[in-house]
Image (cartoon, rainbow, N blue to C red; front, side, top):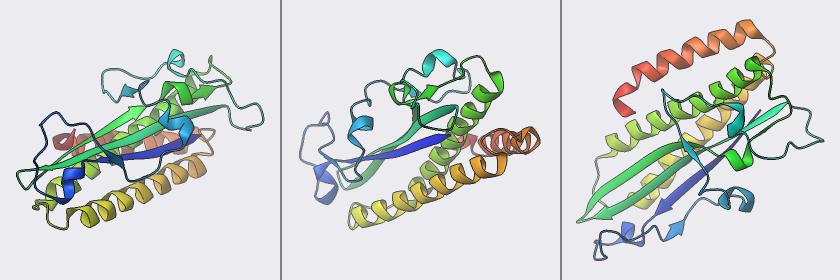
Length: 195
């Protein structure tokens, strides 16, 4: 099972020329994050090809009435700003340990399924980086362009995560899951330039 959020932080300067100091922190969240997830943003793991998830990363208490055996909470964090009428952005794919849980921390198959959710989130982070780079725009009208682009990316990400769970039957169909694993690996390789 997979839960997703989108954190899109924009500087106030996005709508006007940059006059604030370079180290100014993001001033507004334009896409709301549920309070439980917002509270956990300091506790996160960035996606890495070298470091795979392990059961110790799943720190939340399992939801007893939830029929699923595990939940992966991941996030596409987008920070964007304008400086000297130039658009800058950063997209991060992160895992939220404080919101992720498992009822079965002995199953390697279940862990592999949850890792694929995280890997698929990285695919969508790379796709979003590619789209944002392609925007090559000044800061004029950037807010609406950015909100549309990020909103579309979020919808696509959410839909594909659901499709992965549906078709693989939440990892119970090993053959289908293997097809997804190969596809995700190929897509990560094809999008390496946007890592």
